Length: 231
Image (cartoon, rainbow, N blue to C red; front, top):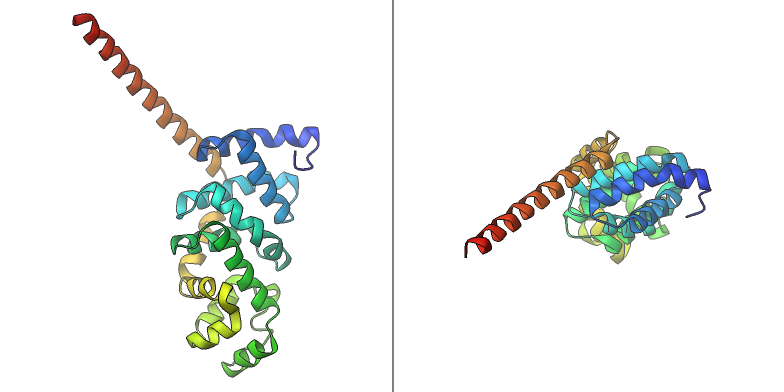
């Protein structure tokens, strides 16, 4: 029950069911994934619908699925929330990383590393940032927001060697992907900000598709029966 009381469970269940239908998961799995993300992002239970909608929209708009997105956010969500990064922007970042081939835990640890290295750069990294005209205040995600910081560092023109020194081996690939997709990240973030009702809409699409599939199957069965009767 993820720490929910009875009323909260009753309130969240319809949305969890829609998420399950939208993403072809069982109810328990969908509820577990969404509630874990809710907790990781430090959101209240009344934000459950928002989390489900953002996750459904992210899965529809990028090369990831709900399970991979849940895995990624299990790593990145606590640090993202601590840096003031919204569920929409964190999901958008994971979506863009997934489009580039970093999915699931790799996307999560990558985003975690980017946020961590920019939030607390080493002395060496600080010196490198300064050499490109960037101060610690310039790259503060809490002060400027992740999107603005990525825009600033993308324009700095870091060498590959300096990127490695700033972000380290684990986060460097993710940083490079996000820095080269700043506009696309902003667009997806905006799209996710308008995702209210996405889980419900996707569930209806899946249900109608399933209904059509069953009708087709029943038609084939009926035809088979007729053929058997004629033989």
